[in-house]
Every structure is written in structure tokens, then in C-alpha cells.
Length: 309
Image (tube, rainbow, N blue to C red; front, top):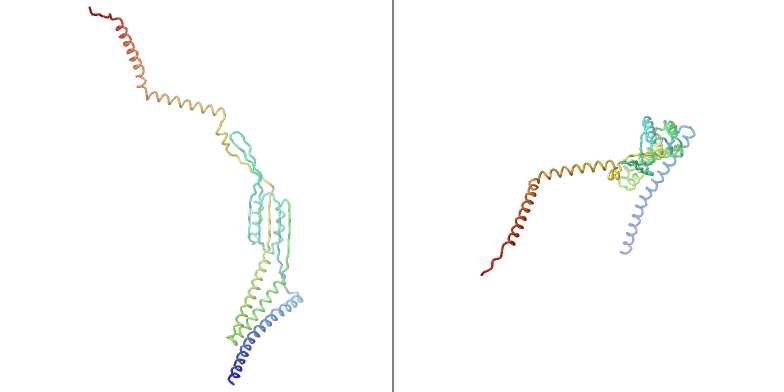
């Protein structure tokens, strides 16, 4: 009897747990189905009505890509940037660089003439108002000597924009319904989680439309300019010529050095003139000494030798 009572209580607990989980999952599935129906049905119906009445506003994204050769890259870049700014556009990117080519050197006297070859290129990313797109596109060929490549596109994003807008509106309606459900079921966590998902989807569609609106309002223009190879001439000093010098310069240098040497010798004589006076005195004294020495030796040899008796 006691065993039967325990088994009966266990079965009741398991059935109660299953019913609770089923109610939560059932509400979430119903919410997903309702949201999908709300998002899809107004989307297709509204689009159909809008196109039947001819009321939708076209959303066109304009883009252009040019690759041109010009006479002077710097001048062309300044002209095009000034034009876009005067129309209310903006310069998103502007890069200019020189690519070095061949280098040749020619020696001329004491100088070296260097010839540098280089090529200048520029890359621009421009955003111009869509209303002025044709003006900018027509101004680029006027700056070019010839055009290597040209690509102009017009992309219709009307359906994409309307779809995002209708899905965002459906998300707003669903959030209003969920607000009432929160009041009735304050302890149901499924409502809060589903509300977050709906809010994220609504925000994503709204941000996507903001990006589309910006691309529609401002056309994107990519331009690459290049110019024919140029030569830059530079004159520098020839160190070898300066080190060697020419004949006239060498003679002048030698003469200056000789004059400096003579001046030095004169100054040296002025410093040592007392010593120079001692030289003849010393020579005279030595000669006199040698004379007296020879005379004394001769007298000694002429004296008679005395012998004892």
C-alpha cells in the first residue's frame, strides 16, 4: 500500500513538470509564428499595393570608376577636388605618389648632372551629391588626355529599402504586443528573450536603411590619375674634381704653400739669429786652437837633446 502511494506521487510530479515546460515552449513557438506572419504578410502586401499605385520612390545608388592619363596629376587632382567640394561633396581619400624610374649621371667639370625619371599617380575616393553625379562624371574626361577605363553603375535598391522598412515596422508592432504580454505574464522569461531578438532585428533593418539612404544621397566616384614619365634634373658637386683640381688651381695652391714656407723660414731665422752668430766664432776659435797646437808640436821637435858627460 505504501509503495503504491509513492509511485502515484512520483507520476504526478513528472506530469506537472512536463506541462510547465510545454506551456513555455508553446508560447515561444506561437510568438515566433506570429512575428513571422506579421513581418512577411505586411511586407508582401504593402509592396504589391505600392507598385500597383505607382507611389514607391526610387532608390538608386550611383557609382563611377575612372582610370585616366592626364598632363599634370597635381593640377587635375586640385581641379576635381575643388569641383566636388563646391557641390557639397567630400573627399574621402586622396593619395598621390611618385614612382622613381631610371637615374643617369653626367660629369661636367667640377659638377655632376643627375637625370631622374619618375611617374606620378593619384587615387581619389569622392562622395558627390547624387543630383550632381552627372556633372562630376562629365568633368573627368575634360581633365584627361585619354581614358584607360570607365565604369558607371546605377543600382536600384528600392525593394531592399522597402523590405527593411516594413520589417522594422512589423518589429515595432510586435514589441507593442509584447509589452502587453509582459503585464499579463511578468514571470515568463521567454517573453523577455523574444523581445530582445525582435528589438535586435528591428535595429538591424533600420541601420541597413540608413546606410542605403546615405549611398543613395551621395554617389561614390573612384578616380585614378597618372601622367607621362617626367625627368627631374639636379646638379650636385663633383667631389673627385674638387679633390684633384685643375692645373691652374694646383699652381696657385703650390705658390701659396711656397710663400708660406718662406715666411716660416724667415721667422725661424729671427728666432735663432743669436745661435747663428756663435757658429763663425766657434769655427774661428777651433782654427786658432789647431794652429797653436801644430806650432807647439813643431817647436818641441826642433829642441836639441842633451846627454850627460
